[in-house]
Image 1 (cartoon, rainbow, N blue to C red):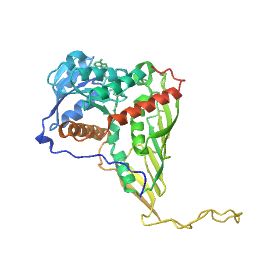
Image 2: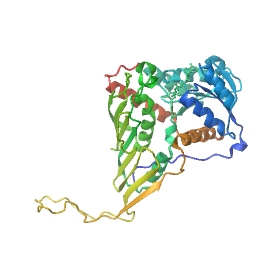
Image 3: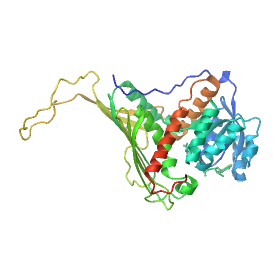
Image 4: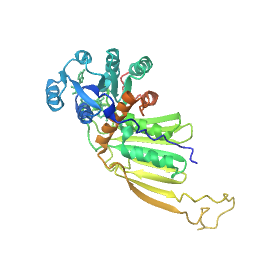
Length: 374
Ligand SMILES: NC(=O)c1ccc[n+]([C@@H]2O[C@H](COP(=O)([O-])OP(=O)(O)OC[C@H]3O[C@@H](n4cnc5c(N)ncnc54)[C@H](O)[C@@H]3O)[C@@H](O)[C@H]2O)c1
C-alpha cells in the first residue's frame, strides 16, 4: 500500500435544475475577469450574470452588450446591487484582500482571485475574514482543476508509482521580456504572485503532508520590470517527500511541466499537458531479498541486485480532452455551485489556500533582494 494518498475531487451534487441559479457579479473585467464572465454565464443552469464592474467604462459597456447584467464603475455601488449573491473579485492583486473584506461586509459571498493576498497585512486580514465569514469566502486556485493534474492525482492514488519520493512542477512560460504591471513590485507583481499560487497549491496537494522545510531563490532575468521572473522553490514534507517548483519566463527550451518519481515508477507530462508518460514496475512484481555487498567488485560487474526489471511503459491521453484554460473555469464554477447550493465541501479549503499564502510569505523573507511590498 503506498503511504502517499491523494483525495480525488468530488464531482457530486444533484442536477442543478433542482436548485436556484446563483446571481453573480464580476469586479475587474480585464484578462481573467472577462473569462469568468464568459464561463460562469455559459453555465446557464447554475449561474446568471447580474452585475459587472470596472474602472474602464468601455470594458463595462462591451461586456454588458455581450453578457447582459448591470454595469458599474464604482465598487461600492456594485456591492450595493441587491440582486447579486456572489461577487467574483478579479481586480489587481494588491486590492484583492481589501476588496474581499468590503464585499463580505456588504453581505456578498466572495470568490477571490489569486494571489489572494500580497502583503503581510493582507495575510492577517484573510485569516480574520476566514474566521468571521464561515462559508462565504472562497479562494480561486482554479488550476487545481487542470485535467492533467487531476489525472495525475488519480494515478498516484492507484498506487502504480508506489511511494512518491520527488515531485517536480515546472511552469515555463513563453520566453519573453514580460512588461505588464504583473512585473512591477509596486503593483503586487512577480511570478511568485502570478503563477506561484497555482504551483504551490498543486505541489502541496502532491506532497500530501504538512511542510517541514522551505528553500527558495528568486531572480529577475529578462523582464524590464523590478519583479521576479524566475522562481525556484523546494519544499520538504514531514513524510520526507521533496517538491521542487520552478516558474520561468526565461527558458528558451522547456522542461516537462510535471515529473513525479515513486519507488515503483515515474510519470511525466509536458507543458502542453496533453499526454501523461508512465514507466512503472508490473504491479504483481515484488522485490526479492537483497543486500549491499561490502567487498571490492570485479571491474565491469553489475552494480544492481536485479538483472532485469519488469517495466511497463504507457502514454495516456489526458481526460477530458479539452482546452485546459477553459476546463479550469468550468470546474471551479461547478464546484462553487455544489458548495453553495448542495452543501458539498469546496475542494479548495480555505486552510489550504492560506497555507499557500504562509509559504509565499516565507519565500519573501528568504529573498530580501526584492523590495517586497510589506
Ligand atoms: N486564476 C487565474 O488563472 C488568473 C489568470 C489571470 C489573472 N489572474 C489574477 O487576476 C487578477 C487580474 O489579472 P488580469 O490579468 O485580469 O489583470 P487586468 O489588468 O487585465 O485586469 C484588471 C481589471 O480590473 C480593473 N480594475 C482595477 N481596479 C479596479 C477597481 N478598483 N474597481 C473596478 N475595476 C478595477 C481594471 O480596469 C482591469 O480591467 C490578478 O490578480 C491576477 O493575478 C488569475
